[in-house]
Image 1 (cartoon, rainbow, N blue to C red):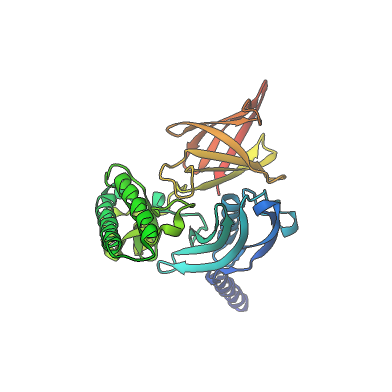
Image 2: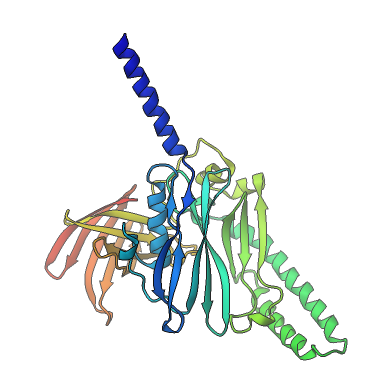
Length: 366
């Protein structure tokens, strides 16, 4: 009886410790990385380093952030993290990690400043499944035709806003004043913008996930060089709460609306890292995802790392269904190696070859 009580107490303690570990909130403990930025000047990035959360989730988040933003993999020692030259960049500051959509997702935000024709700043947001730490975006959480259906309504509202603002500028132009030249420049800017965006078939928007909403976002009318004239800025059209349901995938209904019965997919379309080996002894990490962070075509871009060196190697992709041919080229564009891989569930497997040398590749979604 005494033994049974000790055993029961041990089990309960282990269970409580496990729950406590899983319930630990995410936190940001930024790392300092020296990088070469604008004009070859040295600067220090205060980059997110996430801790806490369910087991493994923070590790996944940190790996994805380093790959997506710094084009490297994180090292256990911050001093060993190699940062490429970040042209034009003057400042990178972590803005922390925040829960969203009922705690089912977390968002990591990075404030950045860069200089081109002139200097400007902004915020880059990265969203993750709080349970797994995998990146999530509209590609994962919405139905395949969601963007097309939402775009029709969003485009109509966007064009109406430009037309209304343009009419107000023309009224102001009829009044004499010192700003007449600037008003004329603004009218020309918005007339050009309107002529390019009146046709709904020409899509200038992105579909984004936000707090309890889906957002169709249109960029500014002004280019970087003419942005000082652009007082209207970007435009967003939102669908919130239960109104999102017709546009969501089952995974989207789970993360955005809290439908518990939906399962997470084996891989994430908005960006998936795979870890494994070449020839059973060379640890590598491979990325499959859209060509840009807000890209809308899944798995049309790839790169990989030898984990020992953590230097990103670009790959040229050819894809047919779940079969991928990934070609590595030298600086002159000459092929040096090819990976032929097949995706099955969460597994990527196949062959790496260079000349007469052939080695097996085995990777698993991370």
